[in-house]
Amino acid sequence: MKAASFAATPHFTSAALDLADAPVHGSAENTSTIVIGSGFSALAVAAELNRQGVKAIVVETFSPLKQHSPPATTTGGISLAALNERSEILRLLENYARRHELDIRPSTQALSLTRNHGSVRANPHWTVHTATGTLSAHNIVFTRGALNQLRRVLHGLGVTKATELRTGMHALGLYLVGVGDLVIPSTQEILHQAKRAGASISSRVAVRETGLALA
Image (cartoon, rainbow, N blue to C red; front, side, top):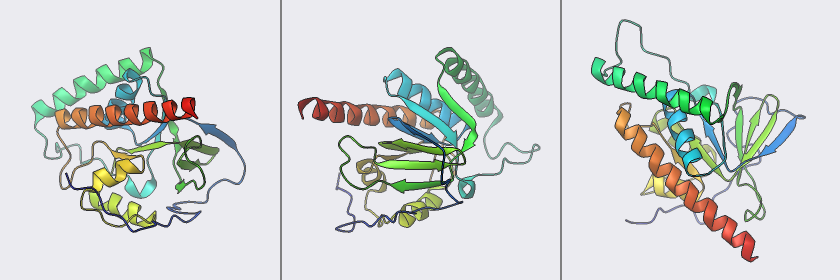
C-alpha cells in the first residue's frame, strides 16, 4: 500500500477546527483515546477499545457533523432485517457499556479540536475542548459524519489530501468508524471498522508505552 503523502510540514493553528468558543477555565483530563460521536458506532468502538485494554472517553459529536435522523416513516435505505439486527447488537453494546462502566458522556459535546505541539512521546497529540474544560488524548476516533465533511475537518487542521486518507489519518492518531463515502456502512462493516481501529490504537499505545519505559 502506498504511503500517504502530506505537505512537508503540516500546519496546525492553535485554534484549529474552532466550532464554538473554547472555555477559558475548566477541568483538564488526559486519556488514551477520545471517541467523538454517539450511538451504535461510538459504542462499538468504545467496547472494542475496552476489550483491548485501552482507556477511552466518549463525547458527543461536533455540531457541523451531526446528522438528522431519517423520518420515522422510512428506514433510511436500510432493510428492516438490517435495522432489527443493528437494534439487537446496539442493545448488547449498551448492556456491555453498563456492565463495564465505560466512560460515556452524552451531555458533553466537543466544541473544538486542536493539535498539541512539542514533544508528543509523553504528551497527548490532541485536545478536545468542551463547555466544561478540556480532554486530551493521543488518539481521536470520529464516528459520525460523511467522509467529505471529515475531509474538510482535516483540511481545517492543516492536513492536505492524501492518496490513502485513512493511512495518513492513522499516522496522526485519527480514526474513522461508522463513516462511509456515500452511504452509511452496514452493521458488520461498522463492527469491522471498530475492530480495526481498536487493534491499531492498541498497537500504538503499546509502542508508546514501551518507548516511555525505555526512555
